[in-house]
Image (cartoon, rainbow, N blue to C red; front, side, top):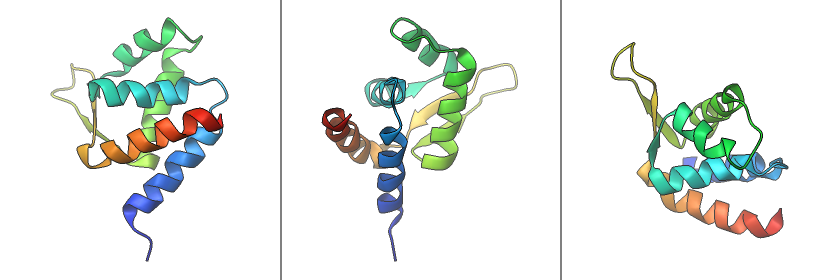
Length: 105
């Protein structure tokens, strides 16, 4: 039986294999640094370096949250933006994948 960590590891590797522009890795690195963020904060961070729309960032974070399973999401009320948290149990796995994939791409 394959463990959840092994599945997430495989999904992360596939996710970064198709990162031709580099902003997927940038999003993951930003989560490693701050651990908690919103879509608007991520978009502001990425706009300086990449030509990326807010919808693209939101789509990518939604994919990371739902398919990769390394993020938690929390919304205080309907008026506040969704806040995404990096799950602590996957911090070491994410750091290993991001650092090892820098040389392969």
